Image (tube, rainbow, N blue to C red):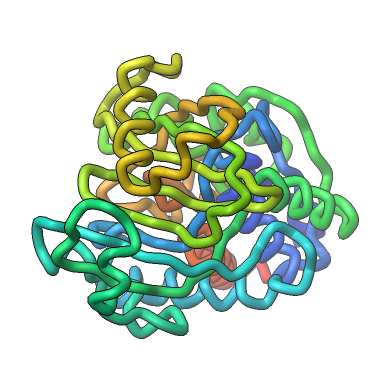
Length: 330
């Protein structure tokens, strides 16, 4: 067989990390990114980008889920000196409800530090918190990371096509392999009824004095980024397709975050972001034959696409290698 033509469908964080890992394993193939949205137009762009999987995040098995996260953390850690939006960050999670809410079995033992908060740390924020944890992790700011990853891919010979794809049949004549990283687009593209949007809304403010992240009850979070930009959140509306900002959600987010860190009352508001997170139970990383195409699906990460993308990308590329060897194409 001649040179393999590989198409990567989607240019969010999952599509771009998959592309970069394809380049490492298939350096002699023709790789093309196919998407109708790039960089600031993607859902990935609005994410705060903290490496923190929810405890319900799930792959096909606990072992595979754990490996995805280990691989992701290691991959991002190697980029800390590359000026690509990856940086260390530390902070706290508080709760007045349950000790279990400040624990995270997917992070403990993976990040450098994950420990109970001391009594003096529990009083850092108003609220009379009964339980807390301090941990150190990574921040991946997609506003910087996505353009960096796209440029890195193109500099290594990857082509880019701006195209909306309604059916995988459109790609049959151009590619031998497609990595489907289309996120929520797979709901219509594949008719995947397990894939549902979880609507999220955050507020971006400028508050350079906030140096640590803070999580608390009722899905409250405050995450600092570069340039003094801080993300205030959040909201999770299951199976909601509404993409316009909601004033009620914004007011609730602001009220909860200011109660947690009162100094935010003087922060300058930069804007509100709303996006639809592609949730699937479980995340789908799977090989499939569609007509003449070998398709490797990689989607359904919910609100943890930034966190898990490099790990699921590595797994997807591994699946592709085994699939092609089974078809005697290598």
